Amino acid sequence: MLTILNLEHLEGSARERLDPMLYDYIAGGAGDEWTLRESRAAWNRVQLLPRMLRGVANRELTTTVLGSPVSFPVLVPPMGFQGLCHADAEVATASATAAEGTIFCASTVSNTSLEAIAQANGAGPRWFQLYVYRDKSVTRGLVERAAAAGYSALCLTVDTPLAGNRERDRRNSLRMPAHLELANFPASHTAQHHHGSGPGSALAQYIAHQWDPGLTWDDVAWLQSISPMPVVVKGILAPEDAKLAVDHGAAGVIVSNHGGRQLDTVPAPVAMLPEVVDAVAGRCEVLVDGGIRRGIDVLKALALGARAVLVGRPVLWGLTLDGVDGVRAVLQHLRAELDLAMALSGCRTVADITRDLIL
Image (cartoon, rainbow, N blue to C red):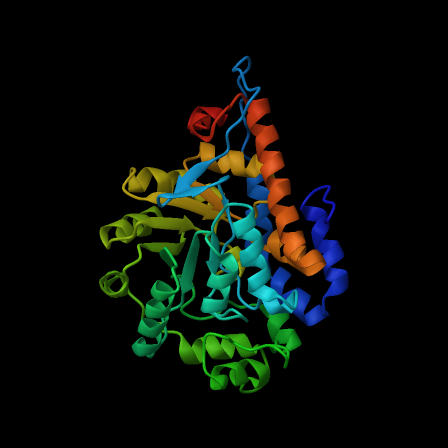
């Protein structure tokens, strides 16, 4: 299995395996990539105030997210095109996530079908991430398929009416490799990613053509009406938007800036997390992603009020380097780091991680 000193070191090793265009797609952000860098740096500005003599000989990392038991509070977020990293694509990541006892969120734009992902995920809890298409019948069909395949929540991404200014992808004229397909859709959708409609990013062109930029809060209520699954709204930064999400029936919100890939110079999710937690006032569960590379980051997120975190790029680096085993190694590394951080801060259980741990 992959040996990991720390998750930051994985990126360089994975970069050596990947085509430069594909590496840039995964690693890159929007504009000057200030937000991409800030999302990592902001975690280091949060200081901890540990407590001593708390009897931490035995720690317990289990918790629940939307009622689903998880072995520790780290989830795998929706990330499309995982076939860029490994031949087994999302099937490998879903299998690894289930083996580690936590939640996998399948992307709308996966290279393997949501049904194949569900089969690989087995009895593990799984969510389906949704982009709302201009053709609402496409959206309805995806929701119905996800429900039939046993997904337990619908994760609605709301921060992508259009693709952000991802200059690396524009420079590289990003195209999906010919051997991959957009497995949840007809061949015509795959062709758009293979060929594009001119210079620049084929993904950005697909988003502009297919996804609905007119999405409003009324659409959240509409999804609630057609989905037997609870809806989690992903891409929230403003506390007022978190309140609106709850008002429109969301069971959870994910504080996220889309990995720094949408609007540059927006704050790091951790900077907004306490305000979002206060704004929803316990009416829904709050999760956070963005720049999490250490178990200490997970500890900080929970202390600031998050129910759990989602960790993206390191999972893709692990997938690139060693498939199923690489993803498992990343999750196991985070679990071990969180366990140590809890012991050193005086927290025996996840419930012991409270805001008074933050200086």
